Image (tube, rainbow, N blue to C red; front, side, top):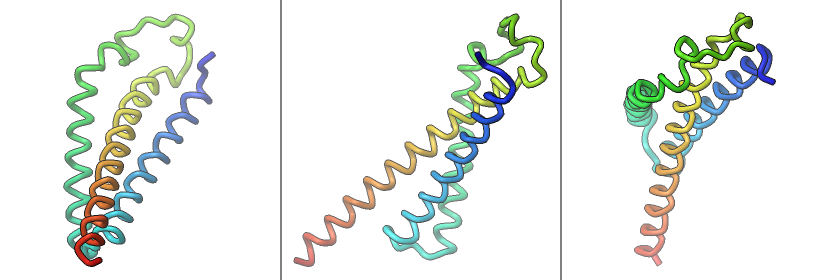
Length: 121
């Protein structure tokens, strides 16, 4: 059964996943792609803003299915954290976008590394 503690713990886990994925993006930019600190900060800022906008767009289309104000789940209506359901969905979408972004940059960094090694051997 979903209760307040479960909703808040899942929300905290989603925050943690977002922080880890953004931190991993910084690692890829600075260590693997060898960007400077300023350039990587500007690039990650653009990545975060773009990801947040993409999250808003996706959530806009999914909100009828996950927005608690439109859902009538009677056994959850009595909880004070009932509206955290929508935030969980929003941050789950955001975490997924950041992880996909990190995976794509990781693949690109590996490809760039292999190309460099093949040219210098």
